[in-house]
Length: 206
Image 1 (cartoon, rainbow, N blue to C red):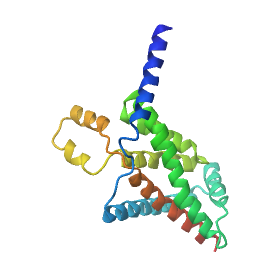
Image 2 (spheres, rainbow, N blue to C red):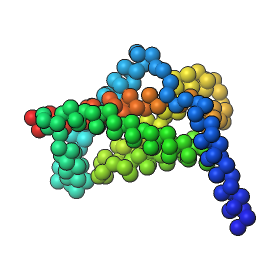
Image 3 (cartoon, rainbow, N blue to C red):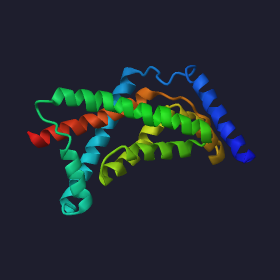
Image 4 (cartoon, rainbow, N blue to C red):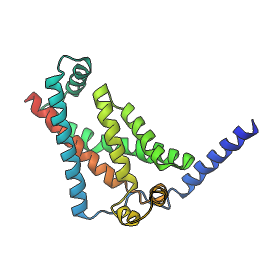
């Protein structure tokens, strides 16, 4: 019982320390316009590739339960020419911000401080991100892109230079202790990805 109390006390202390120092390290940093555009473009490309793959799977496995589930969820967004601006505001601007704040900043931040294992933080927060989506297909690609979004949140381009010519152990420690968090990177990628989703849904009903 004492051991459990000691562990809980340690976790609570770490959590309080994280809350106390959270404001000192801003999670929103400036990006050069070219870098911002590249991230949005990467999100758009990722969405286009995902859409092509899903359309191919829908042709091959149209009669399967998981693809029928995907189609029903996708058609349930009710996006049309009358609510396009509302859909763009909610699904492209607001939803990505809320999801990234919850999954990456809040949940991921707590897990990262408590356990101190960055790989575990990325995977577990991505799994939670996946659960927030509907249907098997959406949850699968949400898990994959949850990992991508987490990597974008924690790691800037300069991490490649820091890990260059280092041993695996040193690289692992470097990645675990790296704290160049920037919410703009994963948010912009998420925006680009959702933008294609809205456009695709709109095209399908026109």
